[in-house]
Length: 153
Image 1 (cartoon, rainbow, N blue to C red):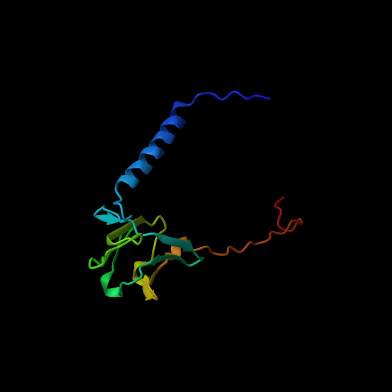
Image 2: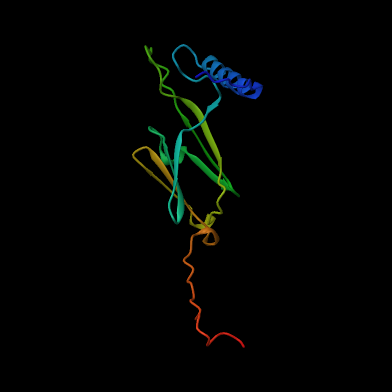
């Protein structure tokens, strides 16, 4: 059976926008695959537990003092720079170099006083404890008697 799909100009515009985005990203890479942008977005993993939001970012080759992490209100920013080795003649270069920055908006209230940052084996781990107001809490249920003792006459 043949189905007829209605033409949707918005869907076609979204497909065109995605193609343009890919074309622009490809044009911003040089022949060796290195980014030519002034700053690139640091890839991260973010997950949640009952008590905190945990963020992890791989930053191999950096020391903790070479990273800048700020939390202002609900905006978290991580900045740094991976230095390029310029004295080599590369045959293939895929690892990013240069300045990087990643800014996230945290939509959950955070207890700023208890934020923890650790760095081990090139992995930055930020633990953002949730504010007490947003943590799940157990609510006790009180049973009421159904017999006539509580009924008013």
